[in-house]
Length: 242
Ligand SMILES: [Zn+2]
Ligand SMILES: [Zn+2]
Image 1 (spheres, rainbow, N blue to C red):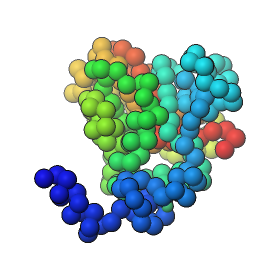
Image 2: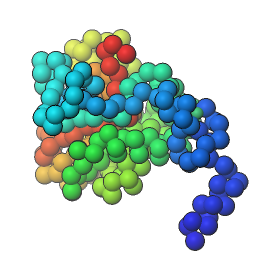
Image 3: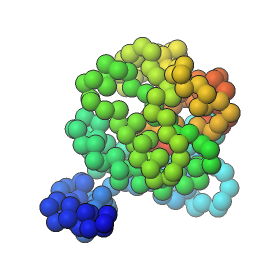
Image 4: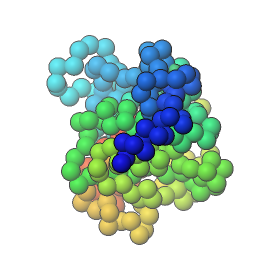
């Protein structure tokens, strides 16, 4: 029955590439050209922040210089894409372009990148958006990614586990210290969701990880509220040299 509906849908809406709109063979994917042009992260990565590192993976835990200098308040982190080129335009379309259909394939890529992070009884929570931004954008792209990641992995999702109490200004162009200062106290667990994080591992989901300051603020409040271990998974990672 489902197969028949899907076939009918495909006849009306033939699968198109998410990057360029050309007809493709597989639904929810990219054409060969866009696939090649999309900077997927693979090979050796920093286990804390997911940034690609030179060399070959040998099964040992490795961290980048930044994460060794300033340890993250979470266990492990990964990202699916590097935030530039076609990946950047896909993410901007998801964020501002009203293209929520991108979240499903994006969550598939994240599920693949985050394979080692998933644990039984883990709860997935998105980085929260202030309600005033939510009104303007109509949806929280991180919550959408979290929901689809829940469908992919079968893990529990709590879309409002965390909330933003005050509207923080845009963090771009600020120093790490300024970002931390701006964020401190602005994010808190939802008082009615506390029981869902206590004693549990939490997987924080964000669309783009830049310095990691927002994810760090989220991780700290989860730990302070009694969460066990925190893991982070971003759709894309801004690399310093990218
Ligand atoms: Zn394409
Ligand atoms: Zn790192």
